[in-house]
Image 1 (cartoon, helix red, strand yellow):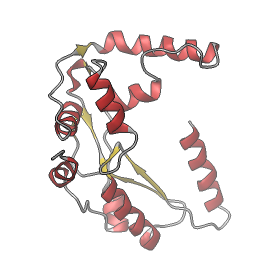
Image 2 (cartoon, one colour):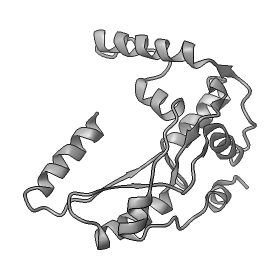
Image 3 (cartoon, one colour):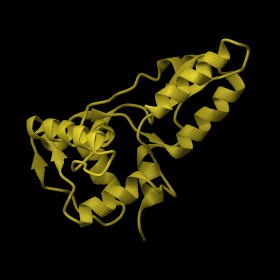
Image 4 (cartoon, rainbow, N blue to C red):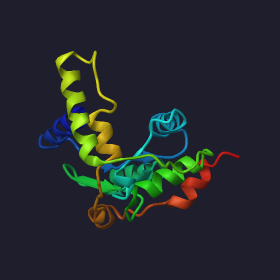
Length: 182
């Protein structure tokens, strides 16, 4: 919600003459990650990570080097008031991406699976409890975490390709190789 509101404020500023360009990457990953990868590793090691409906839904991802590249292009070629989606290219299954990501850290493929019909209502109840108790009670995952980990989200980057000349500068294989624990 806060990101969406910040974007609305920024785009409103573009109406008054500020050069505002918005980039929307999806599932940012790569070297020096202090958010997603450490949380995934912790959950996997604690046995708290499971596939939702097998993890076979599609997701878009964006390596940090591709985000930085897109930022530079947006500064140079972006049109004020415009929004550009950026990713690593073609979507892949969430299960494949997360399995590869965890494998770079020596963590084997997960086998736990929970059905979506069970997870979604539990997440809703947890969010409700959190709202009622000002965060004192909460469910096993937030709605944001569920949206990141359990819902198909794919982005179309054609506008960024056409208007910015965007193309990923690092491939999935190269990014994974950078993360590999030696």
